[in-house]
Length: 316
Ligand code: NAD
Ligand code: UDP
Image (cartoon, rainbow, N blue to C red; front, side, top):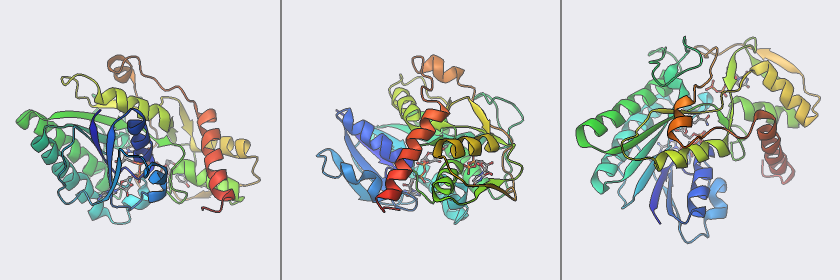
């Protein structure tokens, strides 16, 4: 049994990770400032004897005796990370410094939830880990992209300078139950719009692509990554290489919900990446043959069921 700290644990991905880690017999401290996360996501875990929920902001230091840290605290949807961009940079950078400091003090293993956004608007396709990226340092996405890039730098420097046991994963677009209905990201937007019979908002032409990963596949990759030998630090891409345009996604959501919603076109936000697809050969090799097992149609069906349940129970 390990004691595990999960920052951002009440968020979408964090809540799934808390559950998985408890199910494996560990103790979990879920730390969150509830900016985009919700108590509701972890409510069912509150009675578990191994679970502790702590309201705390990672921009301030936190001390606890733990064996492992998963650093997920950071808003991930463009709408939310652009709401207070200075705070977003602080969360990524000061959060990384505080959590790395904690890892150093208690000799914990620490995993950073980095992102495909470190590749920016990529000129190499698909993106391998060796690609340095094409990121605008002064745009509206920079608080997130550069914050996450700086966090990777800090992780690497703590590793080189202090021999901290680090792991870096670069997560590609992930979706599933527990996403906030007003999260603002494309999968939850389209599903909510389709279920409510509202127009489906396509930004730009809809020909830009993303590769969508169902959350269970990501959690499996994260668990395998934290358990790799100390020598393997990453960064490693974790994503589903099946690539879709936003038009294809919208069509699929309409088909699976049986909605009468129509697509409408809205301006493309600036610096919106045109294409994105992970090269997952490193993950496959280093994480015991890991690969995504849940493809878009099945993942969407499960996510639609979740949002239908939330709507019919009046919770949203
Ligand atoms: P999310 O917004 O649902 O979760 C983020 C969590 O962090 C929330 O619970 C939020 O309240 C918390 N948080 C934010 N700022 C904080 C702070 N200063 N102190 C403490 N807690 C804070 O988003 P998510 O999709 O679950 O993302 C989790 C992590 O994974 C993020 O670091 C994100 O950058 C990364 N990631 C996610 C994706 C994806 O597609 N979902 C892709 C790449 C990377
Ligand atoms: N998008 C869209 N309609 C929406 C929300 C997003 O067409 O209602 C587009 C967005 O412009 C981007 C893609 O969907 O091209 C993925 O957006 P998201 O915010 O989910 O993730 P990210 O851009 O960070 O990959």
